Every structure is written in C-alpha cells, then in structure tokens.
Image (tube, one colour):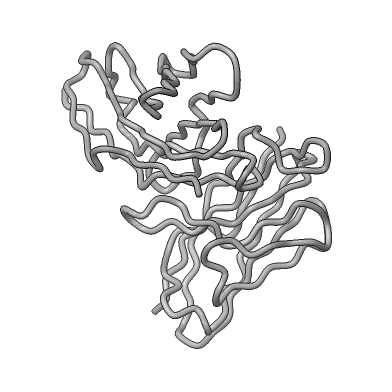
Length: 117
Length: 114
C-alpha cells in the first residue's frame, strides 16, 4: 500500500542535542512538507520541498533544517537552536501540476511526538 | 495573505444530533478549501475538498460542506453524529497567491456524548 511513514513515533531528546525525524513516502509525490502541531495552534509549516535537492522555508523554519536528496525521503533535523522543540511533527506529501504545487490535497504521515527532557 | 478561522475550539453534541463545524476563510483569489480529521496521536485524513464546480461537497463518513463565496464560509456538517466521529477537525485553505501552500485553522475538537 502506498503511504507515508514517519519514525520514530515517540522521541525523547535532552536539551542541547540535535535530533533527526524520518519521513518516507512511496506515493511518487514530488512535493513534501513538514508541519509542527501544538495544542490549540493548528498546523504550522516548517519547511517544504517541491523537487529533489530543493527546499524552502515555511513560517517557522528557525531552529530546523532539512534535506531532500531522494524523492522518497525528507528528513527533518531539530537543532539545539530550536528553543521550544516539544511538539507533534507531521510530514506530508502532494503531487505537483505543471511544475507548481497544486490544489490537490496533501497526504499526511502518522506523526512523531518529540519531547525534550 | 490567506487565513482560516474556525469558530469554536470545542463542540459537543449528542449521538444522533446534527454536527456543524464552522469555518471562515480569507483569500484574495479563488480559494481551494479542505476539511481534515485527526484522531488522537495520528496524522490527518482528508474528509473532503472544494476546488471548483459544485459548491456542495460530499466527503467520507457522511460529512459534507458547502462553499459560500458571499459569506467566505465552508462549514462542515453531518446529519447524525456517531460516537466514532469524536476527533479534531481542521479546515484549511490554499490559493495561487500562496503557491498552493495550505493554511490551517486552529482546529475544532468534536465530542460526541452517548
């Protein structure tokens, strides 16, 4: 079955440590996204990538980094510069049309819950 | 810039009652509108979407929504609530001006009482 996988489901980090969240998709989608979800805040866009080897900052990119070396994979690194990293992180993907992100829906992975101890 | 307002962070209904979750949007160009559902500690699942054409959109699990341009609204309804509908619901908007990136509302938690 096609879909998006995120690992791990739960992640604990000590203050000052970098940590990388995995996101893999087998939907053959060009575009991938990372969101952060906090209670009562909805979803906020961290980074997105439209094609391999290209990515753009979203609304809250500070303290995060990404890479897009393969179409299927879009890992997110939460660095020690992120002051409040405890949150639920969601990865998503979508198709592109005519070289642009499209109005088609985004498909979401199951999420990773990150807790800083 | 686009934005989404979901009226009511928490809605409680009885099983069998009408479900109405409100969503108003702001967009400078024709919008594309979505409703997603999230069960605890899970990802988001698409319920329905409006892109073009018919303004009354039917989705999964008996939900539907109507795009009303004059009211800039996209409210989600279901005639009869089921216990399994208890979840958090997110309205989202995208348009060409934002390169089709999604902007989400803050969500509405639906509780269904027996």
